[in-house]
Image 1: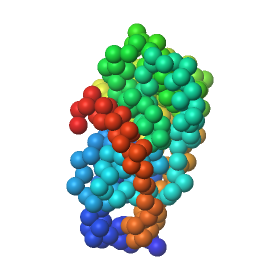
Image 2 (image 1 turned 90 degrees about the vertical axis):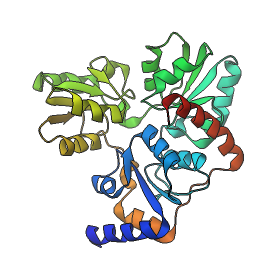
Image 3 (image 1 turned 60 degrees about the vertical axis):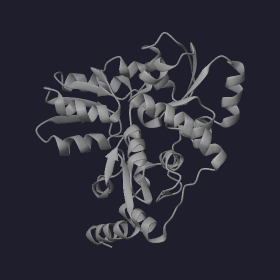
Length: 304
């Protein structure tokens, strides 16, 4: 089926189902084009809260759909591809987190939103890359267990006087970016400003002109007087930036910075999801209630 026919089918079913499509920045460009809202984890969380739709089709990965279900249990949340997951979210389990809490009984648990509902339920508060520093500094506890991203946690530790216990998790997309890539690009483009995501390794972040969330990178590229940028995050962002700011130049740190799980979401899978009302993501109520508290605390700090 041609894309235009698929898009027409999606639009028709959205109206019939009173559905909204929320898409992450890392999905395919054609998926973002049919979405009602495109953003990073924090903005998508807020969009789910504020949506008046009966059905949310999440063009993203499993933990994102879970977050929407946690916040909006009255809505039907659909994930077009059920095995679109996040390897980093799988790097922490309830059992391992509980063991860490026993080892550090005076520590608060700050949970990166890139984690399962079960982990959120075990946490005191959630955070995103956009608000992690503010979240950590808002906590009265002097000791923090930060799960699951060690690189984001290490970045936050530079901006707080709290003791942070890092979890050995990471995003393979960002952790695979290397300082050698940056050095080479700096030689080729000496005037380019390097914008990096805080999920990158510390060895990479030390070269960054600005360390920003995905939405922060998008905003900085638009508002900056610079006309050349090296982008240290998933490569789809470079495509988005080139389309949005055609008068500027953007260079990915690596063409291999590719989130294969996000790319599983296609126009066909969205159409199928709306046709068959699948695949529902439902968080058990006893887990949802606890996880909701952690998300609500984050949203209170971020403003909703």
